[in-house]
Image (cartoon, rainbow over all chains, first blue to last red; front, top):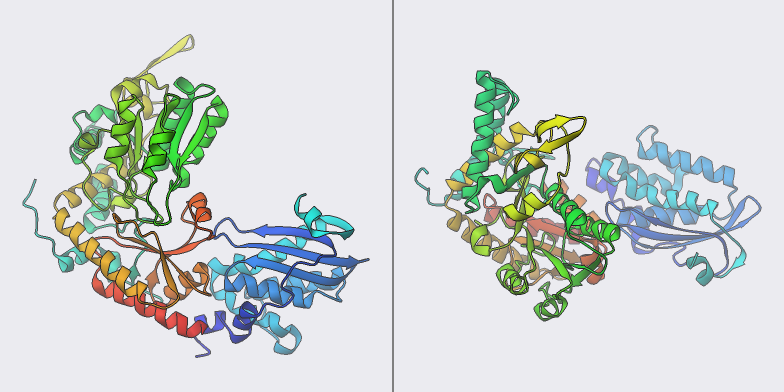
Length: 156
Length: 410
């Protein structure tokens, strides 16, 4: 079973994040906001962040996307709060190298992020796992101001 | 024409080498025929023979090989006229595919016909290839794009069509068979209504020609386009047929070698059609491969092939409809063997990956019909599309894979 690539791709942790996504729902109070879209498959997501200084205090997302994308977004938003931007950059680099199969997983250090490693065997699906991270980077460039309400952010 | 065989599923499958292969350790169940058709040995060998023994440029050499290549190229034009039941091979232009064919026509309309206030009428179920060229044509000319709506089953609203058709309409461009839903549109009725007020009609036959013989003369449209690769020929070769009066009116689409009569720095004169629209060295091998594909289809019992495809569609529709949580999108009464579906709780992209692991190749996505899927409120569907070489075992494997996936995702 463990050698089956499909089992590796759709691991229980990933399926759990897909079924019960963490941090689902946009933050009413947020400092950054972005939408992400994958024109190839139609995956679509929206991400809100609250930053204080260079530290992320909260994150929330909504998505109409496949299991890989939804789980990746859930794992990402769960890991963001409390981290500095430098720590998040390290996290993203780690995820990239797991997706590219350059490094092996370390269950203790990686936590749920390790569940994304199986995607590396499905090149057509890597972009599903990276969409939340592309959206995150776009959000960092789109400051919406301190106490921006969502309606205003969406009309930008 | 040689004697037509009675349709024989087993011998037909043996003609397609890829159907004997395995993917991911499983026998290939190829159900992505609306994306591209597989190639029979006859087409593969024709391409090989051309490059191995006949390769040469056309329309310019006096040597033996060039004459052979030119003859084979031009003979295919005549063969296509016969295939489509059209009298004049000169009205057939070789392009890269249906997309380029539509772009060529849109360019002609942009340059010679469309004015501010004019309208181009398409439908809600068009492929992007029959939307975007007209959007651009309208942006450039100030014309307006009008859309015929579809109902919940995927059937065109013909009353709305009659209302939308008017004296400002300069062209009706409509898909013969929907690549996403399988709907076969009532194109004869569409053409009759348009012609009653002298509006020309373009039929996008990319998805109809693979499924059934099309008598373009009987349809009576003004333009007809399709792609070679979807009728089991090579990629990169397509066909545009247009009435002579339109093609003569249109300016060249691309220019350069082989499309000219005389070039001078003071000015250039162009070849008559079809040469005017075939600048540069064309896809000669593609034309020769397309010729082999047409021969293959001409030797097939196409009525038997169509009946078999319809039986596959019926069986697949029954088997998938019986699966709890599965919904079929596109339930028009007249359909080609295309089945779009959605499954509760499982995104089409995940369906595609899961079925692929079972050797079942389907398409997952928007199928280049985003406005249509938006109308149904879904970003994507899973789509199984059949050809005459599929068999009932393929339908069984599809249904079994779906059930296994549902158990997996719980």
